[in-house]
Amino acid sequence: MEVAVCVKRVPQVGGRIVVTPDGQDVDTRMSGFAISPHEECAVEEAVQITERLGGTVSVLTLGPAEAADQLRDALALGAHRAVLLEDGGREWGPAGTAAAIVAEVRRRAAEGPGCDLLLLGNEAADTGDYQVGVRVAHGLGWPCATGIKHLEITGDGARARREYRGREETFEFGLPAVITVKEGINLPRYPSLPGRLRAKRAAIEQYQPQWQPEGLRKRALRVPDQPRQQATVLGTGADAVPALVRLLEELGVLK
Amino acid sequence: MNVLCLVELDEAGVTDASLRALTFARSLATGGPAAPGATGPVVAAVAFGPADRVPASLLGRYGVTEAYVVEPSALDGYAPQAWARTLEGLLSVTLAAAVVAAGTDCGSEVLAHLGALTGQPMAANCLTASPEADGTLAVSRQRWAGLLIEDAILDGTPALLTVATDVVPPVPVDDAADPAVLVHEPDLDPADLRVRAAVSAGRDGGVSLATARVVVGGGRGVGGPDGFAPLEELARLLGGVVGVSRVVTSQGWRPHTQQVGQTGTKITPELYLACGISGAIQHMAGCASAKHIVVINTDPAAPILSRADYAVIGDLAEVIPALVAALKERA
Image 1 (tube, rainbow over the protein chains, first blue to last red):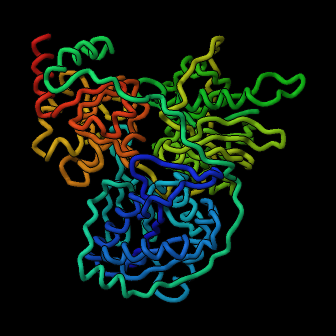
Image 2: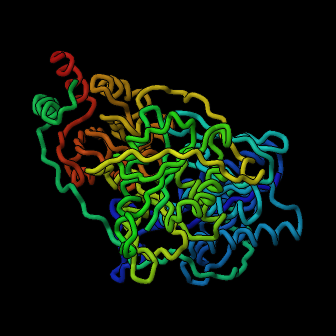
Image 3: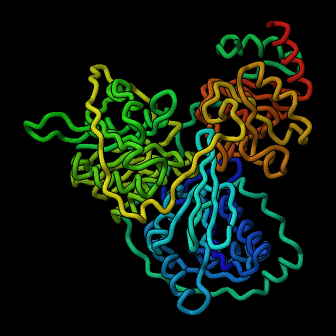
């Protein structure tokens, strides 16, 4: 089973999120970077699949040279090879990103064993475009399921489940396929020390895909207005309970 | 401009997220310059299911002027690419210049497929959209699950947009008229049906986190998997459910289905009672649309206090049992 996973390097925002003075980016001077959360689970899922069925996990990112850090994080979790598609310092939209992934999957298939399963996160933490996986599937002509929180590989097919509005939706289709996953599909492991050492020494393949303009063009980013400011303190400890009960009555939430 | 909106049906008629999407679609349809002599713009809705389950009067109250239904005999169940193909086919029927859907798992997925089928861009989780003089749309949309807003230009024909499920309010029209409900037969490709959902009942049939009226939140301060019983009891007394922060699910204390936040569920309750939660920004992305936020926390300097309405400073292990006792006494 050849599994490829697409990951994205995103800022690790903590207590608040700050926009650069020109309004074009998130200010990352004070933040680290990490793999976007859904994709961290995609890496774990891919590693678990190859642990069960054999095969290799390729991890793929489109980003700056520094995104090699996130590829090494994925290698430390058990991925076998890493590919960096260099973004050339430009901001890539979903159509261009999908085209670059499609080209890489095709290039790989022409050289050796092709990909049986391509995993992505349901949406990137930062841009939240909710479409790269679907566009990749169309580019490759493969079936696609999104928002998946339970995945079984069944011989030459996949059975993928998600919860939607309190019900369970199950999708079954043949491989190769594109599946986008959500956090909760698994609990990602912590990297082992040997894994970290292996990742540190691993070679990373690098390619320069062709950027393309997009139909959705950013003008500026801004932080939305805060409807709430500082909380009114009702009291301290159990002594505050009568005031809390009165408040719940006023809010009309007591039956 | 004419706008086509995907409508998701549920037991009550139309989902809350779709009513929000219809409100957005109507505002987009009426926001542009009207052609001279033209009748009002078309707000077309399309739903999938038996025709007798399409609530025409409810759609009319939300400004729908034409309703299309795809019956199970033509397309049974949820098949995202087939739904997108159906929307594509309805473009020429409705002369829609924009297609709108709720920013749900279903709506996002179907519009992503429509974007791929038509080769057009798609703007996800929009808050506003208005036509520009050059035919593009000025849109504002959520990034970082709503922690940031992006102002952007959407240059596509048709324009494809999903609508944030937690911000745009559902607003009915004053002069409602029931639209005709027309049965539509989509022209599908066999490949459109490769991925189709088999639907079964969910595992927990209780009140859903996303639509609960009261959510009792538990975070790291709960201390471990055994600390949630008092929160469950409190939630029961308030007719609500328990939600948790990301640290709780990543520690394996509670299942991920209970997570509130950017990578979990977005909630819109009357009351969010957040206990032992510091208020990481990714968590606030999931609860910012709560009508009231009340915090129980030992730390008066916790970030969540700067984004809440009321707070009790104290240990939840002390405050919650006392609150439970007081509520029981009152009942």
